[in-house]
Length: 352
Image (cartoon, rainbow, N blue to C red; front, side):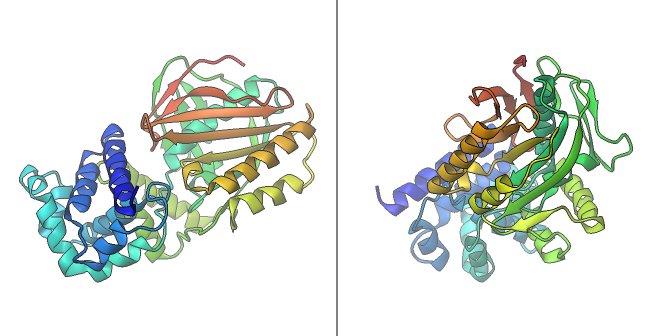
């Protein structure tokens, strides 16, 4: 298969992914981009000749982020009309996108140079549900949380948020940021727990104390999800007040370092990640899996290990909430499914 064929398949997948996750405008923008690009522009040549896995590299979202940034800057009325839901503009989207490529290519090209950052604090609802379930399994209800692919670290502040998960209340009542996803199924176990420490890593962390980096992260938000913009403003303010523990390091090396550290008696060590596994190279995925299984083999009831993930199935466009824990079988348990940005959680009702 040629590079261009792979690129077109990746864009088609992203279009359906957007539409299946409540983002039809973003889907239309992505569709217009792949319809408009050709070899007459540098942007088109770089996109269609992409050397790598365009889906794993999130190529469609790289380009879409650039166009959303132009819209947010108010530089193109016709582009903004698409984002604002104008059906006539949407019908002409491919032509509008082609014109903007011709006029603003220099502004769009840098968006190809790095993967998108899609950090979303709303995903932490799934993390909290997973911690409730682990507590109900009898694991020590004091957690040491380790997150890979933390981006700007929004989910490293989950102890500062409040949650209403199917009627189960978790977190400070006076929290500046609260989450109440549409809950489907039985409520999660109502079990008290504490978060003793939280730290994360990212290969290229986003520094939200830098306004330019904060604006870039905001540009990756899908415009249909209006609530996420106010949520992001609050999260940025929280980061500026007290930055989370976030290290610039690859996931494999960082996990090797963390798992080598002594674990406190009576604490459950948890690896967690959301919508990041697909961006980690396969050999690094294998390394992390091996590290976790080796550490799991040494886990004890008073020093247990767990692995909590919310990751996309690109064939079904759904996101599975899965957990493994040791001692025990360490086999994956599907706890449910969740919206990519925290709008809803479909709980499976699996009993510990």
